[in-house]
Every structure is written in structure tokens, then in C-alpha cells.
Length: 339
Image (cartoon, rainbow, N blue to C red; front, side, top):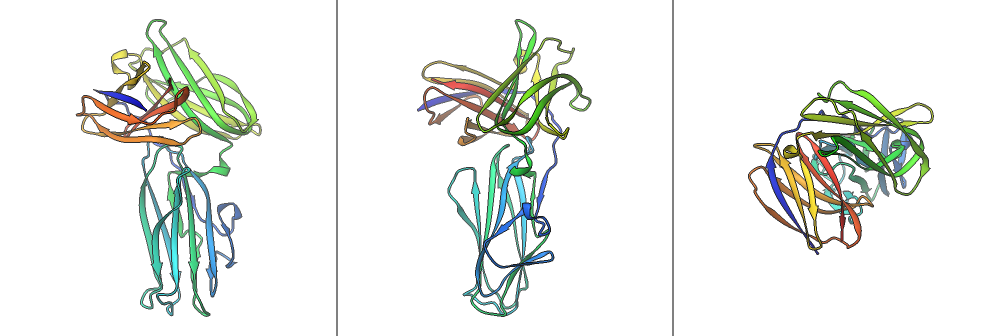
């Protein structure tokens, strides 16, 4: 068991948000799969049967988003009763499947809705299953194209590269910024583009790094920026490019060239970790620890008024972990080694 001592400093960073969305489309088989039932035109119907709709793995693709809204609309025939049911299952990362919602037949209602906001972290995996059953014709449940909508996520199969982390650290002694990132998997990945900005809006390309091409294991990358512009905060954007030229903006980080303004700084010895964490004034942040398999091993909410927080994190010795600090303004990660 490791103790993580968090010392909170007050600082503010601002990063723009990315936009992504999943929408069910029965004309596109990559957006769903079913165990049975009937798909006709833009609708899936279950009548006198027990069937499941499975949504592909969804990856939280907005580094600044922690609240993930989703909505599901279900149509039902007017002759359903309490023996007819619909069950919504949700699974986050490698946690067990959980029952989120159970709906039973209702003769007075034709359209049912499920609206939720899930508290997730960047790169989390969300899985959704919808089980429907009824026991006779002409009873039916149905879902139409567009009836399942999840914000700030991207289907995993659309991501040619699964990013483990992207971080930037300022070295005051050498006056350079070291950038590092790692991928958990790559498919047809040609290269990465690193871009730099002083305002998080206007970016200039500073280098290209060859990618692994195809890989199912962790690949590490790094680059040292020795030409730091004059600015209190420097922003870096990581873009991945396929062999066919298709590009994907993977992540963005902010790093202060003032050591007193560093958002995350970790010191360690054999017994504990000390992290200096910047939290925006009048705001809060989510501190999380993730292993190299992308699994969440610890999470805690912190605010700008904390001066010292001791966290009991059950970490395995001789392993690399990521400490993530996410607020509504920014997200920063730091890789550290648990002895």
C-alpha cells in the first residue's frame, strides 16, 4: 500500500474542449450488433422474443470532459404488461456489468426515455447493452436510429491509435520542455505531429515522429523542445496520422515555464508520493491513478481549498502509473514509478 500526499497550489490553466459523439444508426452495422430481433429500415424490433442490442466500445475522447451525457429512447406497443421488460446494462473499463435501468411494460405509455450523466475520465471505456423481452405477439419493443446518443465519446474501432498518456514537463535547469507519450495499440499508424502554441488556439508544427505502424503492445515516444517561446504557459498538441493521410487530434497538454506554477509535480521515496497539484480557484478537480493497462486504480475529488490530502492507493511495487488531474479548465498527467 502506498500513501500519496497531495499538496494543492492555486493556479489556472485553460484548454479548449474537443467534440465527439456516438449516435446509433441501423444503416451502419459498425454502430451496433444484435443477438436477434428484426432490423428493418431504421428500426430494431423485438416481438415475442428475448434479444440484446450491443453498442460498440466507446472511448471518452474529450480530455476536459468528466460528465458524459447519454440518452436512450424506447418505443413499446400499447399492450405490454409487467411481465415484459427492458434492462439497460453499463460497464466502465474492466469493472463488472451493472444494471442501470429496468423498465417494465406499461399499457399507458408508448415512448420511454432514459437520460443519464456518467462521471468518467479521459480514455475510459464505456460499454452499453440493452436487453429486451416480451412473451407474445403483437407485443413489441423497438429502438430507432438516433435513439441512442452518447456525447464526448468515439467508438473504439474508429481510433487507429489508443493513447495511454501524453505529458509535458519543464526542465528549469536546461530550459527545455520534455514531451512523452505512449500508445497501447496502433493500426496503420504512419507518424505523429507535435504542434506548439502560446494561446492554445494558433498552433505551429515543430516536429514529426515516426509511429510503430501496427502494434498491440505499449510503445513509448519522446521529444525535447529546446526552442521554448517566451510565454508563461506553452501548449502542445499531439496529432496522429494514418498511412492514408487521415489525421486525428489525440490530446493537448499545457505546461508552465514557471516552476512555481507547475500543475503536477511528483516526488517520491520508498514509502510515499508527494504531488504538487494545481487546482483552479473556486473550482474542483478529479485526481485519478491509472495503470499501464488503462485501468483506473484510484479516484478522488479535490478542491482549491485543500492544503494537504493523504490518499491510500493500493499500488503494486515496481510498476509505472499515471497520475491524472482533470478540472473543467484543464487536464494534466504525470507518469511515476511505484517502488
